[in-house]
Image (tube, rainbow, N blue to C red; front, side, top):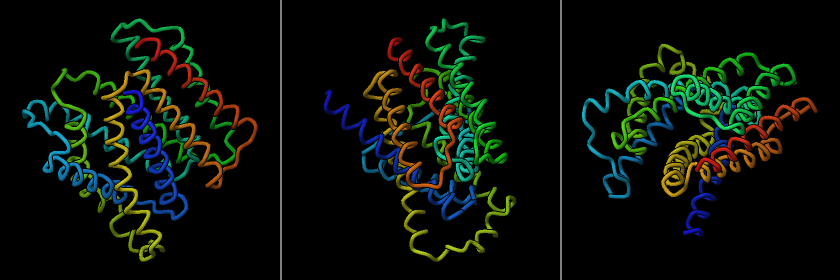
Length: 296
């Protein structure tokens, strides 16, 4: 069982790393900044692969009631906002910066649990939230590659992630499985992003994309869709086999590896102040992992 968990954890880390690096390459190096098309492609591939897996008996998708689907609809809207804003932010920000800002979503969840659900919060979790907030708050003033649009979309992204996770936790037990939720997210995203591609101008602007007929674009474009699906599957498997504390540890490990390798592979300028902010953010997430493991 321990070996199986290690294999699942390492598979998740590999998919996480490959997915982020591929997306960053397409968005920042090739500069394919048409998020309705890019995310529409990824969700289309994810939905098709999940549907095929269901038909072949590799995944279980339950027939949900109309009320369950309608209840989940606001979460699907937030999912579209998450991937759209995340794509816009990642195209302009370095991966370590993006991940540090992304982690602030945990502060929103912690605040909601403390203020609205009146849950008891451990000192480690409170310290974690403070460190995450401090790191994200100081980053804009110490980022030598500061991009206001990138930070703007990152803030929208993190608020949507926080709201999505709060809605996810508020669902009735056994109403929708993780796979059911993701299947609905894929279906809704494909439809909404397809309709949004024309008003946003992406559908016509993509014809001017300089690498549209290059094999390196085709390869990375296709890889992004499949890697996104494999990341989703490995995440669901990780959550089903491990405790929340173990999941948090593997996610933290994947983020550290991804952030570290991205610095070597992409044009990233790090000053001492920036590194300090990133380390404070890393310490905050490490404390979050500690509090999750202690709680479980």
